[in-house]
Image 1 (cartoon, rainbow, N blue to C red):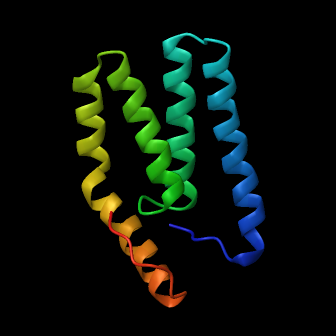
Image 2 (spheres, one colour):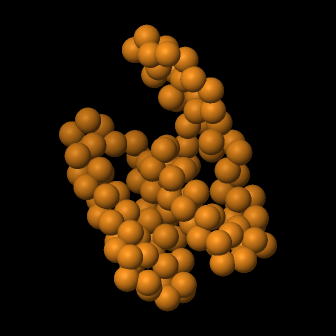
Length: 112
């Protein structure tokens, strides 16, 4: 896994936002379910390749794909995705990073 250095962060943000905007635009025009799933999956795969499973971009991409499957009654697909992604462990990693950052910046402690 390649973690971006500071100079790559803007580029990474732009590439992630492009994929997120595609998801939202397709949702807005009422794209077919299969197209929505493919777009969400492409964004999740992009995140897994670029920042890894424990990054908040990846967690958000996973959560939105999971939600899309659940909203259409594809609970079995969502559950398999959740197991494959190991959502509980990834969410813990994101929460731990957020709590560590909050402690360093003297933010009010929060709980995930």
